[in-house]
Amino acid sequence: MLGVSRREITPEEKAVLQRIQKEEVEDVREELLIEMLYLIVKHHCLANGVSVHLAFPRNALRKIQEDPAYARTLFGQGWRKSLFGEKFTLWLEQFRHLSIHLEPDQIALRLDKLS
Image 1: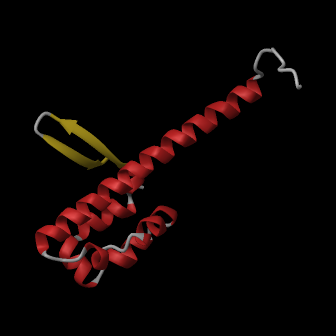
Image 2 (image 1 turned 180 degrees about the vertical axis):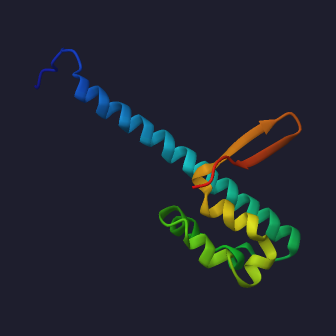
């Protein structure tokens, strides 16, 4: 059986642990924002009688997460642009700068800063 060493953590080990924790939090935040945007798409499609599967294929989420500029390709022209508008395309392109605000009578998505 291997023994477990009981020693103080080194500064290098501590830095690695902090980076891992920060990356995990950022990944969860990103997933929440993308899911929120997808739910908004579903709601908008339902309100306008359009199939969400046609308007925003689920695999497009991953493509936008990997390359936010893909949002402009998908939503920046044609019928999707007419349906969702320029603001939504900007939200998808800049989703990493969105924040969710819970207020007494509303939930707000805000674009905090542009890159």
